Every structure is written in C-alpha cells, then in structure tokens.
Length: 325
Image 1: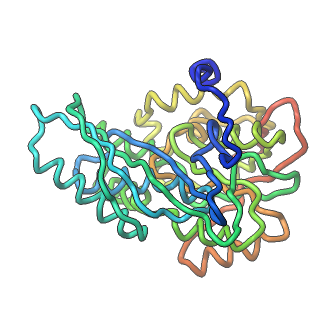
Image 2 (image 1 turned 60 degrees about the horizontal axis):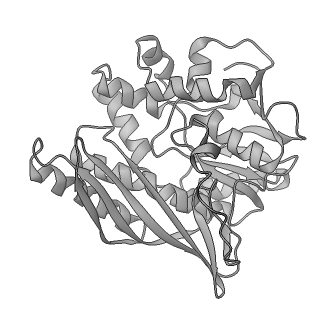
C-alpha cells in the first residue's frame, strides 16, 4: 500500500508546537515544559479468551506511547462489537481485561466509543506525557554506529496464526499470550536512562517493515545480524505446518525489495523477519558506548535485550542482512 498517496489529502499542520505527526508511532505536542504524546491503535482477536484479548489489545496500544519515551496518563476505549452474534458478557470481559492492563501501566481508561460491528475489535486512544525536558524519541534519529536492540523475540504472529488454525499446543498458546501481555513499560524506562537516538515498536509490519521505517526516516542503512535475532522456539516448526498469515505475505510483498541478503537464507528464516507482531517488543537504536549500560538496566528490570544489528552509512537499500540463524 502506498501510504503517501492514501494520506496526501491531509494538510501539513502549521502549529509550531506539533513536533511529530504522520509517519510516527504517536504525535508529539509541546505544552509548557512537557511534551504530550497521543496515539491510537486497535486489533481484532488474536486469542479466544475475551479477557486476554482485551488485555493484549491494550498492551499493544500502549506500546506506541512507550516507544516515544513517554508515560501513559489516560486512554479512551475504541470498540467494535457484534451485538447480534456474541453475548454481552464477552464485551464485559474484554473491557475488564483492558482496564486491568491499563491500570498495570499506571494509567486509566476514562471513556470511549463503541459501534456495532461484524466482529470484535478493540483498541485505545492513549494520551501520554514526557516530562522534565526529556526528548521525544522518534524514528528519524538513528545515527551511524548505533547498536540496534530488540526487547521481545519474534514469532508472535506465527503462534497466533497457529492458534487460529488449531495447530498450537496449550503450551505454545500460553507462551504467545505471555509475550503479548507483557508491557513495554520497563524497557521504555530503561532506554530513557541511556543515549537513545531512535525507537519504534515492532507490530504489524514485522521486523523488516519497522526497520525500514527507521532506516528511511533517518537516511541510513541498517545491517541486521540474523544470528542474533531472537524468536519463539517453535516458530520454524509452526511455519512448516502452515502457520502463515496474510499479513506476512503482505509484508514480504511490501518490503522484500528493500532488503539485500549477503547470505542465502531459507524460506522459514525469511518469513520470520516479516511476521507481523501483536504487542511486540521495542526496537531501540542506542549509542554503541551505551549498550552494556542499557542491557544492564534492562536486566535490573527483569527485561531482556538482544543486540541484532548496527546502523551504517546510507546504502542503496535500507536493510542489509548477513549470516544465518
């Protein structure tokens, strides 16, 4: 999809206080000594349990705020619900899961809007804040030499597709749910304590799609070390069993031409890189000198971080991969 064409009717804003808008995970708006951050996101069910779905949808929506170095303040529900085909207690449980997850983040749901729809959809419009003169961390600040750190393993989309296709075991479903329920709150707090130049969260466009956004907006090329990319342990097995989503095919179609592989990789290895994630991890560009300090801060918070590549001078393509898994 050519988003430039789709969004061309939206005029360039003239407000000098608006520091980030279209093309970012969230907008940034300077207000007195703070920066207000606003985002919106919603998804369709990735699990059958309505409470878990609600919590996952809200964890996913909160990630855009965390990726900008902000803390969420409050949120508005955005819900589509099929009142004629699902019982009202499904909606109640869905909202309860969302409320609990937003409260875990230290924020509140204060209202929202619901429409009758053909299938459940749930998300949030989230308002957050960056205080104390701290920076808005955009996608466009990656610097040559930066290390690229990912905070959650890939494969969530493969697992949720396997759940939908009834291929996943109970243990695999539990592993995927636990990953999606995990807030990016503490990874976000850790990255604010080091020299972080750029950040985004890994969601529907997969790892390659979101790396492309950073590389293109920062006018750099990113070298991805495939041996270091983390993934859920049964990802390749489930791919071979057919757990392949339409979103993965769309990502391959959209981004493959922007990637140069130095080594031959298998079909499954390539598919993993384009797997759309729900409530995936943060993708953080950190000064090389700060990597050890950052990984220590992550560990102190009980979080993981994986150094998966580095930022290079701009090349003919935004993404270069090397080695194999």
